Length: 345
Image (tube, rainbow, N blue to C red; front, side, top):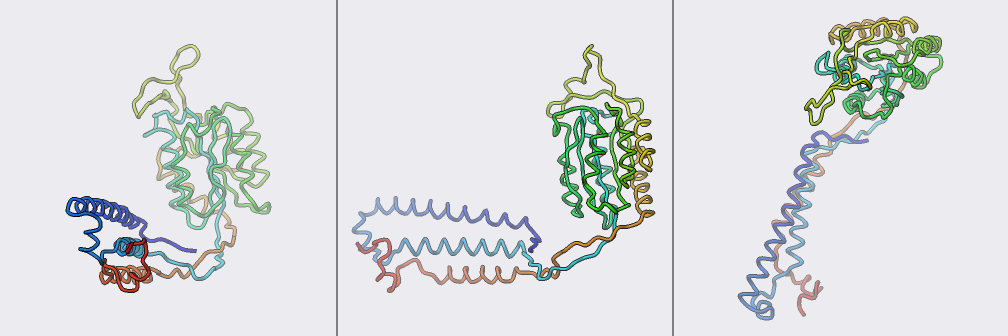
């Protein structure tokens, strides 16, 4: 297993094509200028030791020097030992509503972006808990399986949008059903599903499915995003509002936060409803809930004792640079005998 410390230094590799291009332009210019000065046979007599091979070799060595230097600056590290680490935590699945109603801007910047902020801040305050992510609208889609890789979780979270699922609607029951497949330990009691939504559920099954989830040992907490007064759903292009979503009668659709649905779902699954308007309050409430729960112990294997390897590549870069300095562009005796590229003909 390896790690790369400073990946930005890979940009040093961009120097290599510049060197090669400059070399080719220089060779073209030299060849064109020499042809104006004298013919090919006379040039051979005037410069008998000129070697194209040595020039190419020098450029190759210089390129290798910069490649080695780039890798040295990145500072690769190699894990020398595989350790089994024991952790205690809770398994948390986030189900994020990505239906079109989540584009409403009755809560800044809009409901979906607010949902992402809430989940990100909750993850930032976790210690050794495992997380999974589900996206849902008319259907539910597994976005990220249970993992301790918080960086990946936040990356997948930020990529979520209202166009990722073709079927529209807000089928919370589908999200709950999918969440039950995320937990891999049947005896586990500390299972949590956090639903982030405006609560506009277009099915009647959510409460019944929530009760089934409770019987499977899953507690459901719901976070409502939006305003009970509601707001229109903007239709944008390149960030500019062109219109607002309308119904079949041509009236502007007003979408409202349905707290009653979310409260009912949470109550059926031994959870609580939290209004998502204040991020700090949401994070504190979830944190207090997790601190009061029993923790499950699980094992993960991780590489440890990462050691720097930059010194080898730095030494290699210095070697190539010194070799390039002392390597002459004219033919050497042994190279002349090999007659590479038929240069003596």
